[in-house]
Length: 421
Image (cartoon, rainbow, N blue to C red; front, side, top):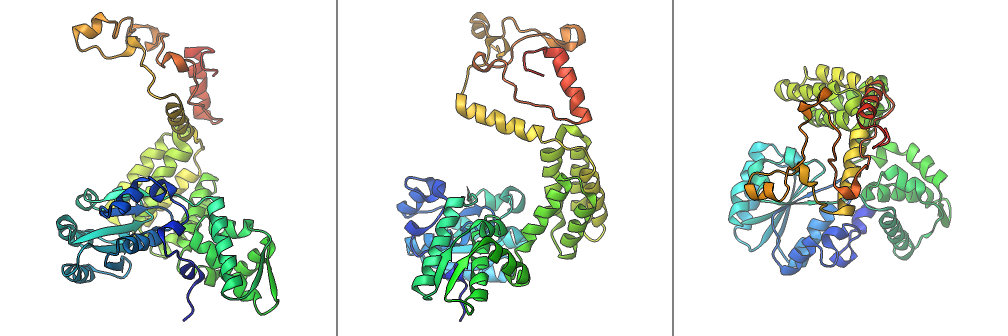
């Protein structure tokens, strides 16, 4: 049997697991639970190829627990009930469900009783936000762990392991001269990266005793073997990425083309609509505030009518967002504000804008000197709202579109030079 390279390299011990140190590193939250011998039911949420399945397998091995696995793509309620019945006759059984976001409500409902009674410990893997895709009663019984993209250093570790495998097991002389193309075609997905390397090795093994992996070689071989490279259907992620980037890049033609690709492939329309909602705020924001309203209306419409009719509002919204002016100012502002909070901690709120519900609070200065904006001309008056330590810090930077140019001018008329508008 031809076992894929990614499967051959799957680690057998938790210590050999690459990535997710925030979860399974020394002293990390999930590692503590594993070491205690008692893990909660959990949802592993993260992008493809970051080790969700591997982590589930390693947990079961570490705990020496009976391990059952189902794929939400081809399993139904009967399969779930069969596993639960088997688990009743063993102790501390783990049920791993890959792509649990593809389970419908009735399928997820069938898990509830067994999870609640402890008959099984559920480990679900998903690439989608579980808040949207997992029913609330089940989600409330699970701990959600977020897995991150592997770093370049971690991907390089995997490549080094693969090269050692080819040299020691397959007796191939491999020289890894360049890695950028392997990492680029994989998009950070370790499984796709190893799949790409495996295809390159297969194409070159009969030609030379020594195989030198270069960027040009990788790109040439993958282009010739694109269908083989994407044999598990992972191009799904490439198409949604191209769809979003086409809208961000203001190309409605490309955006609708990729929308059609997803519709033709049977993509969940709510998945597409949800991505449009995120983009409307992240990439357009206050350059065109109506974008978020239309995206929200589209999501609601898609939810109500489904295919085939929902293809039309999806197309309408896609074109509207692609042709809207762009701004990521809101995205940058909140990330900048979060970084500032993490750096400076809980700075004291200025006394004059604190709440003063009691006499004691009023006596010690809470709310003293606060100026009610509506009592002043143009509903504005100069006063300090930020903590003293970060006074004058500009967090929101209007961008170069007509709407935000107006906002910049207005803010400058209010604040003068204080924030540098």
